[in-house]
Length: 434
Image (tube, rainbow, N blue to C red):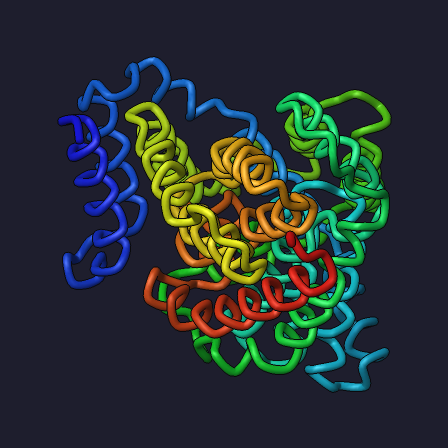
């Protein structure tokens, strides 16, 4: 291996170990992330300009816009009114309340192809409901993120309706057209696992969540100095509702109107400040600096891993392990497990880009059906919730729930095993490769 590979692994190990032991080191997750960013910038693996560009990536802008827009909603009475309505409908039953929010998350995750957006919309609402129930947000944020991430694009609407065409395009581009994916294949393959994720998030996940936040929750802009702020005037109250609803609808329709998600979110944030729903200082306080630093660290370290060829090395190793295997479950297991592990540390789009040609070319070499393995690759790269580097949703979740890296491992190990077993067992039975 080259010097850059060893250096990249060292930076990656520092980041993960730093997240694990930040408390013992008397520092914060944000500081560890910032150190990792600077190490990458000086490593020479990727240009320093690329590291700088990560601070203005579309995901960073999306998160910033969503947090400010959500803070605008928090300044209105809408959150409290909705939480009171949820409390009334659920008749004071915490499980019923959680189930309602998670089912909404499932529906939104099929219409909005971004778990970060879904989480950003629902997290302030469910946090307010937790206050009514006398429960800490630390009991619900992981279940919410689990559904937003694991159920993304399952229903054949929105991005889920075009997935089969994209995969067929990849098959054609690699010259393997003996098999084609059908419109409902991805839905049929992923829906049972989706049911498992939702049931787990409702009934089991809250039991594994800490009763109280492990780290400080800093995302709320609805309070200042621990005291409720005075209500907005009637005009700004309506504007606060309208801006949030307007932003959410545009995010749902984003594919049809041709505007980027970050543009929509930042427009909502701008309107919240320009109309006086939020004061400039309130908007600045709503920006989650720790979340942004952790996301930029993930983008920078993940980019370094790609640049030094670490992803390709892992892919080549998988192809070597598969060899001439003719067992669908072994093939499916490798296709799911390795990307699943890797996507905890690299952005899922990068993992998909690395492994898609490997899966297609391997299936072509073995002359087997690639539909099941491709769906498993999609499911594996979308089921990332074990580290802050997995997806931009996780740093948001950690801030909203007050979690640290150890909490993620404690909450995430069991659903990871269950999702893996059920995914591979079911998909390779319904869509066998051989």
